[in-house]
Length: 139
Image (cartoon, rainbow, N blue to C red; front, side, top):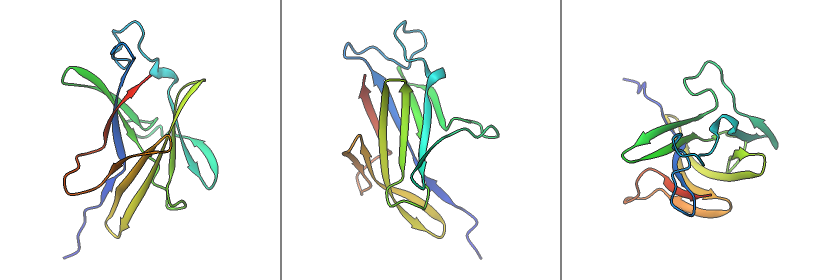
């Protein structure tokens, strides 16, 4: 019997705090990030392409949600096969962009993230004791 399942593991999550530990994703915080302006770009064949899929539940490929006592953002990452380490840019506003690079393990039934770099720094590696990629960003 053929396996009908496909595992796409290409996302990560952030909490975003100020230096004063303000939750910058909490819409009730007066200093929160205006996520209406947030854009994701995937680098495909050397070109930045803004992510917008109007038929998807999350057309801009991110989702903000409440987790326990904070807000988090889930980013759905670039997993193009045309690059060894596909790049996703998170453009928070006109002057603040973060860069995420991911190496993937690809099989017939899966795309699994193996390593993640944030702004050039290696921040996560799949292994026997690792959990799903989650980070705290300070802005």
